[in-house]
Amino acid sequence: MADHAWHEFPSPSDLAGALSDAVARQLQAAVEERGSATIAVSGGRTPALFFDRLSSHGIAWDKITVTLVDERFVPNDSPRSNARLVAQHLLQNEAARADFIGLYNSAENVEDAAEEASAALARLAWPLDVVVLGMGADRHTASFFPDAADIEALLLPGEGPSVLPVHALSAGEPRLTLSMQRIAGARFLALHIEGDDKKDTLEAALAATPGPASPIGAVLKAAKNTAQIYWAPKR
Ligand SMILES: O=C1O[C@H](COP(=O)(O)O)[C@@H](O)[C@H](O)[C@H]1O
Image 1 (spheres, rainbow, N blue to C red):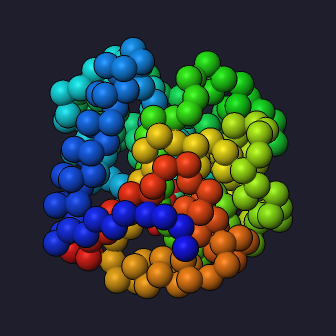
Image 2: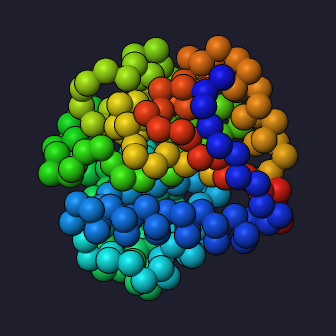
């Protein structure tokens, strides 16, 4: 089983407060140590409250770059866009001063879009200071879907492009994902999940062999630093 630390809270609101405090501390420390900081965040339904709280922290947002762990190959104004969620909930208040690099671009196909997104991220200082992951009921994290055509290759932690294209029937549309190396290399890696169903899913995923049937298990196993798991029951 991967090395991880478990943080449990009575409600999503308590979780959002604690996770945003921890992330803000990491980002501010990175700015003080290295002059700038980076964070990659997830999309989906779970992170909105955490984003709202983080956006109000008075840290040096003008020295912080925000990017995405993964994205749907849809324009930024689509209701399914993770960039849209981040714009509406995170790049607000104090955090409106942050720089944002999304993964979507209007390339003809998701393969070309991944190349362009990798080029856009090339100016970042690696490793990322903070990565906050989510997890789906099928044990996917980022866009590492168990039914992705090349899931075994996607889960390899070796060097390569920062952003990869993903085709998975269960994902709906093609996806763009940060690579395993970029995610697992984060200085501070958190997994944010809520509800008994996701707790059960994670326990089963961690008990399974890390790999295509358990992408979240593979990521936590590959993590360079102890993964911090944040959980609360649903409202
Ligand atoms: O497809 C996605 O789903 C996961 C989990 O989303 P949630 O709605 O169950 O919170 C998310 O982590 C990922 O970034 C997103 O693209």
